[in-house]
Image (cartoon, rainbow over all chains, first blue to last red; front, side):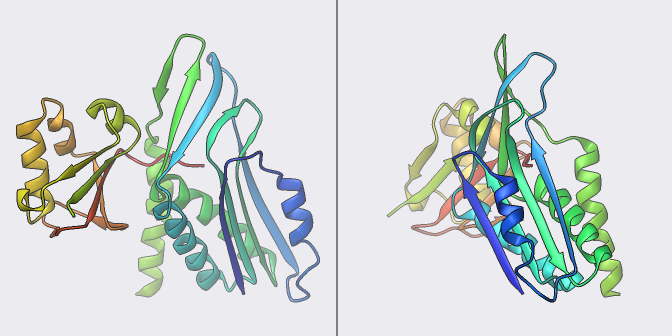
Length: 156
Length: 82
């Protein structure tokens, strides 16, 4: 079992990260990943991500650790970029490996859903006319709360 | 030593600065810091908004969380990662 959490300021290379994950653990029959990238449209020019150094990394480690324990993963990985990004550039890579597929598919969904509203990141959109901070959507909160609530049910 | 206050993202923009160092005698819990900043800064009211998340020394905190000399108290708008 291993966890890797990183905040990076340079361009993310999801393909290289996934290539490194594939084939290195003989017990892992399943590998899953999620990549979030900057979405264009509505006059968007760039996105800027801010974090709380030290505190954000600790929050991501807690999320990865929770996923490893809940789904008995062999590996959980979260790499999140901060700083200014252009349209189409990757923002985040979440990946999991485990003996079987259901564990990794659920674990990746859990990690990205919880990360969006429970780890201290803030997003600012730059458009041709100005900039604004992005508020999380109601459905983002609902997704995270769904996982956290089902964890409580599981404990009962 | 002091109470080290940090403002992130939109709250930093609202307050017009990223941090403050307050005399530790100002407050013994988070609510006292908020009361002090509401009193001393015309923008301080924003820290009392219900959406504000508070982190003390890296841990999620609330109005009644105790604070002492050397603590770092962060005021954060809602998180929006990924």
